[in-house]
Amino acid sequence: MKILLTGANGYIGRRLLPLLVEAGHEVVCLVRDPRRFELPEWLLAKVTVCAGDLLQPESLQSLPRDIDAAYYLVHSMSGNDHNFFRAEQLSARHFTDYLDQTSARQVIYLSGIANDRNLSAHLRSRKAVEKVLGKAHHAAVTVLRASIIIGSGSASFEIIRDLVEKLPVMVTPRWLNSRCQPIGVRDVMHYLLAVLDHPDCLGETFDIGGPDVLTYKQMLEGLAAERGYRRYIFTIPVLTPRLSSWWLFLVTRTTFSLAQSLVESLRNDTIVSLKRSITQVLPHHCMSYREALALAFTRIEQNEVISSWSDAVSSGVVEKNYMDFVQIPQHGMLTDRQTLRFTRPPEEVLQNIWSIGGQRGWYKVDWLWRIRGLMDKAVGGVGLRRGRRSPTRLRPGDPLDFWRVLVADRPTRRLLLYAEMKLPGEAWLQFRILDNADGSHTLEQLAAFRPAGLAGRLYWYSLVPFHFVIFKGMIENIVQYHPTGASSAAVPAT
Image 1 (cartoon, rainbow, N blue to C red):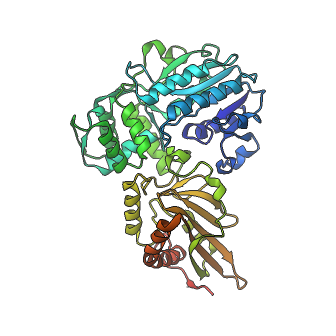
Image 2: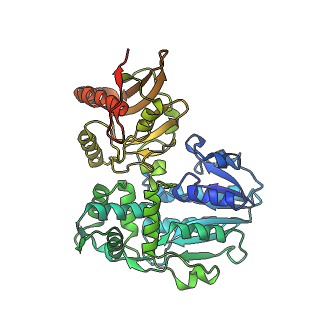
Image 3: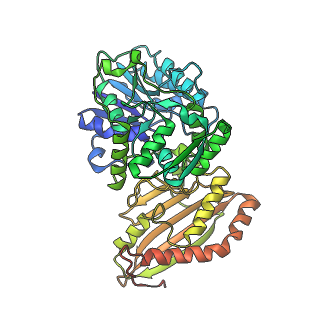
C-alpha cells in the first residue's frame, strides 16, 4: 500500500515508520522541516519525505493524491500554544480536506481513552479531532484510544522514572488515585499495523490497553520495585492542579505546558471500555506494566532509544523554523572563540564532542551548568533535565539538555547547537575540528550570542568572567578527556 504518515518526526511516528517499510509498504512522510528529519541509510531509498504544515493548507498541495491510507499522529499535548483546541481542529480539518482529494480508503488516528463524562480539555480535543476526521467523504476513520503509553523515551515513562529515581519520599496530589490501563509502546505498534486495511476496523473506534488496571500511585510503586528502590508515597488533597503542575515541572524533565496538560488529564480514569475493546476484533496478548518497564530499561541500557517525547520542537521554547539558524549570523554578534591544537587521533576528540551533555556533562564546572539549568527551569525554561536521547549519538533536531542540535555532521567534524533556554537574545555553540598542514589538528569552539537590546548585552557582559573559566576549561577537557582516565596530548593553538 502507499501510505501517508503524518507526525513522522514524533515519538510514535519514528517507531512506526521502519515497521511500515519492513512490511513492504511505500511510505510518504509529512514533516514540517525535512532538514531535521534524519533517516537511517537503509530507509533513505524507501521513503519519500514531503514538507508541509497542517495549519497551512496551501503547503499540502504538493502531497500525493494516490495514497491508499494515512496515519494521523499529530497532537499538541506538549505544545506552548494555549489555544491548542482550535489549532488541533484546524489541523484535522485541513487534513480531511486533503484526504477528500485522494484515493485513500482509511485514516488511522491514535487518540486517548475518553470514557468519563467530565473530560479534560486535551481529551475533549482528542474526541473533537475524531469527529473531524470522521467527516472525510471517502476515507473511513479507525480510531485507537490509548491510556498511558510505556516505552523508552515516552513522556509518561520518563516522568514516572524521574519521580521514582529522584524522590525517596513523595507527598503527592490526590490524582495519584486515578486509575489507568497502561500499554507498552510495542503493543501500540502492533495495533497500529494490525488495523491497517482490516475490513472489520474501518469506521470503528477501539480502546487499547495492557492487562493491568493500576492507579498512578501503583505505577510509581511498580517502577520502584522494578529498579529495587524503596519509596514512601503520601497522598494529600490540598495540592491544586496548578501546584501539582509546578511540582511535576520542577521535579521531572517535563515542560510546564506538558505537566499542566498531564495533571489536567490525570483526573480522569482511562480504562478500556468492554464495548470498545479491540481484543474482540484483534486478539493479542499485551505486555504487563512490569514487562513494559523492563523492556524500556533494556532499550535504554543498550542505547537503543529510537525516539523520545522531547524530540518534538514543542518540548522546548525554540521556534518551529529553528533549522533556519544552521549558520551562525555574522553581524551583531558577541562571541567567545577558543582554539586548541592537538596531536591525538581526531576521531577520539570528535567522540568526546558527540558525547557532551547528559550523563557526560559539559567537561568543566558542571555545577555552574546545573545552576544555569535551575535558573532556566525557575523561569519556565527547559532546564538541564531533558538530557539527551543517546549518550553517544546525535542527529539534527535532537534535544541536548537546554540546547537543540542543528548540525551533527561527523564527516565535516562539525556540531552546532542552538539554545532553547530562556534568554534576552539568541545563542549558538559550535565545535569544529580542523586539519593542520603539519598533521596535527585544531579544535575550534565558538560560543555566539545575538543580544536583544540592552538587556541582552548586559546579560552577556555579566557572564564574561565565567566564560573565561568555563569555555577555556571546556575545550581543554574535551581534547584531553579519555574514558579510561588517561590524558592526551594538547598544545596551545597557533
